[in-house]
Image (cartoon, rainbow, N blue to C red; front, side):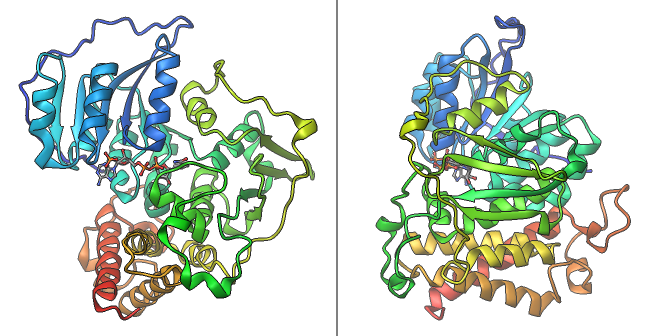
Length: 443
Ligand SMILES: NC(=O)c1ccc[n+]([C@@H]2O[C@H](COP(=O)([O-])OP(=O)(O)OC[C@H]3O[C@@H](n4cnc5c(N)ncnc54)[C@H](OP(=O)(O)O)[C@@H]3O)[C@@H](O)[C@H]2O)c1
């Protein structure tokens, strides 16, 4: 059984938590939320929703990576019981700035687990970017909380570990990704067994019309300019390479418990249809609306209710034609790489994800070209397969890396030997491999 790490350090004195507040909002349900990654794009939009619904949402914990000034501002406004800063060197700045407030301040990545399961928290918004979200999400699952999941990397890396625990316990995962929220909304009241297939829509990114022959000249600045969505840097690059859609295909497989062949992708440049479900009788349900992440964030908090929210009304008579076309997997190989990793299973999605995180970082710093992003990911996957045999974890070498099976109820598949330690070892392997390629300039 997974146990969250408890070796975090308390920086401030422990201050009594305000637990005497009523848990009843105007409609009888006050959610007490922890926002992991409150300084990012999803985190800030989550807090904008809290600002509009103070009778329904109370912030208990906020966490940031490095953005100390915004975290301080947020803590002063939302008065959480706990704030966490990833960058340990900056913790004293926060303690000083929040002196006199009733708030505990912690630092370091391990403290994310504490924020996820802080006393009084019933809902965790996972808005951190990358596989750093894995441990706190597992901690929230073990604690039986609602998880408003934006951090798709967690399910990509460890869906196999997380979802059986969710289904066996009290925790619930409500997707925040707009495509998965759309599908989730389409499935309300429907029998899951009657899903024929899903269709995830993709904007196609900023280079959908660009001649692939010019891709080597793409700069980070160009790639950071997404046509539809205003998002964090990493997901914006993932959208440009179509890796984002690949990660979403894997996320959908785990969230909705589907076979790989039940998940299709279509490019829909207008981003008005957020995704669709085709049922076994041929009926297709879609969820539509203006591209605005506040809706799926809020729905993950309000479900099964819907709360009034300030929104852009669609003027359908002016919406213009809605276009659909197949994704160009030749020009954008990341989508096929993700599918390959999903089909291989085991640790391969962790390898794909970590290699991608490092490749994106190298691209953003100007140390890797745009076409080299999928190239180094493919090399990392091949290297991993050469060393360990494949994405599954049956190899002796790999089995020796981590402890034995931790799930007692998963005995059939050879992949049931997946553990957090094995996934983290695969993640580390891929990161080191890509960093070495980057340093050697041999990609
Ligand atoms: N943005 C969207 O519209 C959107 C849509 C769908 C899904 N998602 C998913 O939501 C997640 C967040 O995306 P985003 O666009 O909001 O990203 P973002 O703007 O880059 O924000 C990331 C957040 O994570 C924090 N963080 C980064 N590295 C950290 C670390 N090592 N330890 C602790 N905290 C860390 C950042 O802190 P600092 O800024 O303080 O360093 C920031 O608060 C991603 O998984 C993304 O795929 C985003």
